[in-house]
Length: 140
Image (cartoon, rainbow, N blue to C red):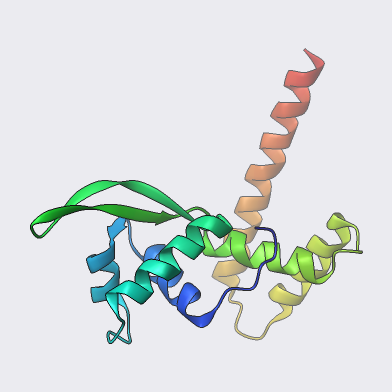
């Protein structure tokens, strides 16, 4: 799954699922797609491909009209997908260097606000604390 480029259709389905706060059935995904002229059989094939690639998980079973159908949820967040692509693009670069390069470029982007930078600082502080706790746990 690491760093796989996805087709336009696969990404469209994942975007629908990333924006949903719960697993969705095939008809619910179809209703939320911006271009709603999909053949139900073709979406079934795309969903199965995403499952095979490891990007989708079956969330459960729900009633869909007269029958029952599976619900789907994303296996990774949009951020995790983008991070995988970034790491794959520079696979010969040490991971730590890649993180620093990508984060530096993103923070320097002209549309990054102070609020976003503050949120990043908060996430980094939280991660630093998690790492310290793990280190203490390993020592004890």
